[in-house]
Image 1 (cartoon, rainbow, N blue to C red):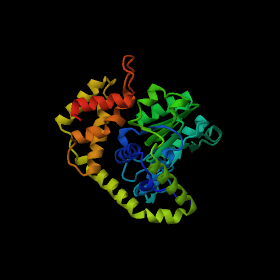
Image 2 (image 1 turned 180 degrees about the vertical axis):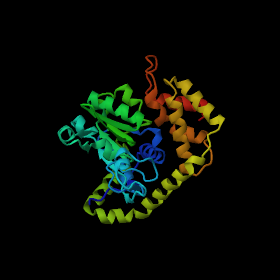
Image 3 (image 1 turned 60 degrees about the vertical axis):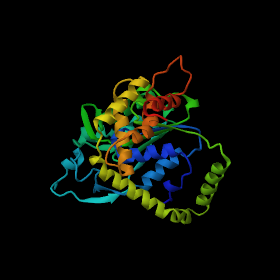
Image 4 (image 1 turned 120 degrees about the horizontal axis):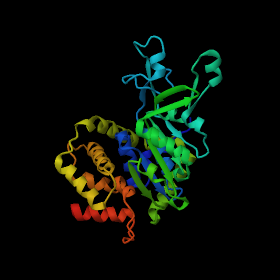
Length: 339
């Protein structure tokens, strides 16, 4: 099994790393969109975090990695001896959705011949099934075909994948952290899918010499001796893993009072964001950050730190303002919270 570059060893790109950690603490935030230059560690960060997370408990033999403490899926409910479902620990899945994937490969395929000839509802799970309770990673997400975009929007909203062919129907859980990456020079993302990402971050190639040198040094050291490099960062990885686990445990108890709600609403009103998804995402991200920091309540500090990734992709274009979305968010944050 190939070793994964340690998450703790990633140099720079602090906003991207924090956004991915926050999404792992609270998957209901809605995933992360990472836009920027090639070769800036986008895919490396996603795979590194998934490898870092503690293994999850899943029902033995379930193709969807069902949580034994949750509601059984159709497959598990149909099996005999449903009283005590055996479980085991499995790694958190990270599934790549390639741009050229067919719809059957993504959603799964029903075997109509067996269904009509033998009366057996045979279903071959797709990529969405494999990604359940894990990460679905789409590189060059802005180049994804429109029919797959529509499909992902539906599944992301419902948390369930439904496959229907010739009067037959199969449904299964499909809850995952959606992570997309891309280069803005190669095209924009459809607004419907853009809005489904909870957080959006921008990554750039480092411009200072020490950072560039350190990035290359660490990557070269890892590729020459992966085992030794991973061992060197083992303590840092364990520390981060514990921090994420504790943040998940604290999350339900973190309070977001009226003051925090009002500040979130004021910021979104000042920026003119469409709908109320901006406030909800901002609040959830701030709550996850507070849990990660070990704080009991959401404060201005948390809102300020997650404002840009939570809101920059929800802004309308202003023909009278040549500033980028990040600058507009920073300006609004400074006016509302102070420098």
